[in-house]
Image (cartoon, rainbow, N blue to C red; front, side, top):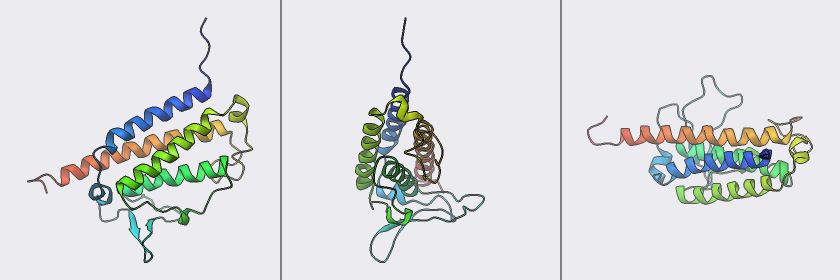
Length: 182
């Protein structure tokens, strides 16, 4: 008789699969590709007067939501991970405006890898009771009164969605920069 795979194991396997897809795209990215804007109405990251890279953002989001640069998408991954990690396992989430894009593809890779490693470490320590609890998600803007297992599952899904968008945007960038293409 086989035993069921614990839910935390499933969450970690999902995370590892999404991260492997991200690494597949990451190896071909550079700063130029990350900052390329696929359309005139693109959300991206921009350097402010102090040199920090801030992400375009609007509340409420416009409908339709603008296209996004790869830099914005990587910032978005880092924003959700930073916010969820610090809220659920730390001192509380920092304001969105205080989470900058690191400024280069290399620094972003380091940042996101560190967040992924921290997230994975926290997941591996959870019990089924922890996963069923709402105490860590209380007050989380997108997870208030939701079990931690659902927030963790959503974060894995959000990573997967953003990674797929990075792949599509990178393909569009490559097509736009081929000789003879317009």
